[in-house]
Image (cartoon, rainbow, N blue to C red; front, side, top):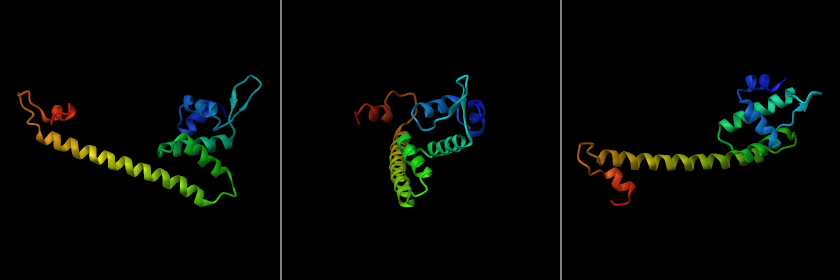
Length: 129
């Protein structure tokens, strides 16, 4: 398969596929004329990587998960450790976003939104509240 076929089947842009190749996550073969020739296993890896990235895993986490995916003697506890660590980071981001929402909601509710120049939103952003 060529890169266009793989891109269509995985939903990944060719640029992303080339990047994954550059950093060693996939190593497609090369034809005599130098074109990439992807195998079925490359397609599976790229699908795996696309799904993992969509879940927010870092490239290094993806590298670890891909190694575990390919290791038939892996312990599921190793996979769970990586996923659990990522889940903790997601939960922290959610907490940060909720705090941001609460602060912004409070500021929006405090602002009269009229023609006067005083604005609690700008005061808070400027650190003058």
